Each structure stands twice: as structure tokens, then as C-alpha cells.
Length: 325
Image 1: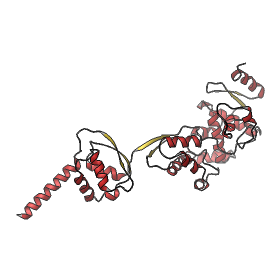
Image 2: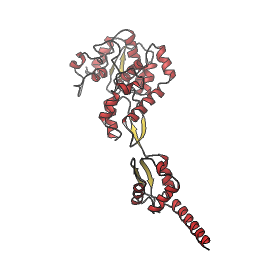
Image 3: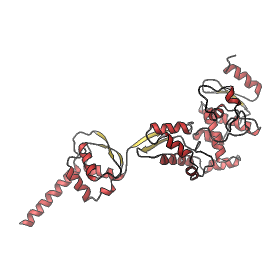
Image 4: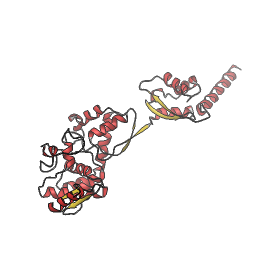
């Protein structure tokens, strides 16, 4: 008789547990972002679940977790849940590590400082930490990048990161995306052009900053390639701006006259390093310039440019589009 009673109780308990783990705490589904902190005890996690009405029975949930031997498999992070989830689904989610992801979009042509501010605003890491890593020789060395900083290699794209992402993880993902984008075909093309990958990145960064119209990228690229072949200074305003700290509203003659490793009005060849982080289209344009004889261009103030093959025509274009003469 006793055995029968024990068996009946065990069966009832099992049915009760099955019912519990498969039944949501609420009939109506309400979205909730649930957070598990690093090192948080099961009792605290269960209590928080109960407080946010994600489970109906604190003791039953803890018992279920122990039966599944899942306590040590619960991963810290933010989780997107809702009150219509059953305890079984909730535990599966907590042990899966599929934490809530936040969109982090980096537009083409931003420099390190601007991306650092975006990272801070997104709550991923501080501006100071981001810039410190991008200028850390030991950290940079692991990517086998020849530059003194990671400028140019922080690939612009839309990324998704969990809230606990740190600066190193963020930067590694961006550089990894650059490496995947700059594939073997592009490396072979750079070699054929007698350019290093770093030189291509530098040129692409200038093209990126000079271009307001995507269709003009290969033409802008052709101008710079043509000038380099003729040993002419590139005379790119964005390179001047990158090399000075007192630029605010518009470029002035004092900026153009100042000798810096980036001032292509004063130095020949490419500047000391990339001046921004170019996207795939600017990298491609640097590698595959249009075939033109253009040596000059001036903005038409509508995102496009007037291109010229000689200085006389260029000066006319400057008067027409910049001086309104």
C-alpha cells in the first residue's frame, strides 16, 4: 500500500513538473529584456524571473534547473524574452547564450575618432578605450597591419553585438571584416599595380573622402593614379584636414601651406597613412580606376565634380563652380 502511495505521489509530482515547465506564467505575451549578470546565483536568477512574471513558481523552476543540471550552463547577458514563454523555453534560452544583439552601423568614410564616438554612444565601449586600442602597437601587431594605427582597417558595415561586448571584440570584428573583403583577387590586383595593400587602403580612403557621388569613385581614382604616375602632388583637401588639429569650418591657406605627413599640397606621393576607413566600393575604385586622362577635378556643389585634363580648363571650372565668375 505504501509503495502504491509513493508511486502515485511520484507520478503526480512528475505530471505537475511537466505541466509547470510547459506552461507560460501569463496568458498575455509581453516582451521583456531579462539580464543575467556574470557570476549571478541561481536563486537570484529565479527570483528575478519571478519578479518579472516570467515564471510562476520559484521553487519549481530551481528544481527543474537542478534536474537538468543546467545551473552552471546559464550564460550571462541580456535576453529577449516574453511572458508567454514556458519555463522550458526560458531555460533553453538562458543556456544557449543567444543574448540580445544591438545594431552598430559604421558609415563609410569615418575616421577612428568618429567611430570611437559611435561605439561610446552605442554603449559598447568608451571612446578612450577604443582609441587606445587603435593606437596600441602590441594590439595592432596581431593583425599584421603595417600602419601605426588601425585607421583604414575598421571596415564600415552594420554589425550586431551583445551589450557586454568589449572594445577588443568590436575592433577585431571590424578588422576581420576588412580582411574578408580585401580578398585574394584584390591582393593579386594590388601586386599587379605595384601597390601594397596599405597603399591601396590609403588611396581608397582619399577617394572615399573626395567622393559625394558613388558613380564618380573610379573617375576620382583615375585622377589620383594619373597624378601619381606623373609625379604630381595629389593636392587633396581631405588629406590636409586630417593632418591638422585646428580645422573647424573650412580649409584655409594656412592649412594648405602647413607641412605635415598628410598634406598632399606640400608632399609628393601618398600621405603617411589612411585618412578614413573606406568601404568596399572605394577600395575597388582604388584598384580598378577608370581609364581617363583627367588630372584635375572641382566640386560642382551638387555631390558631383567637373573633371579636366589640363590646368587651364581646371581654372575655368574653379571660377565657374567655386567663385561664381
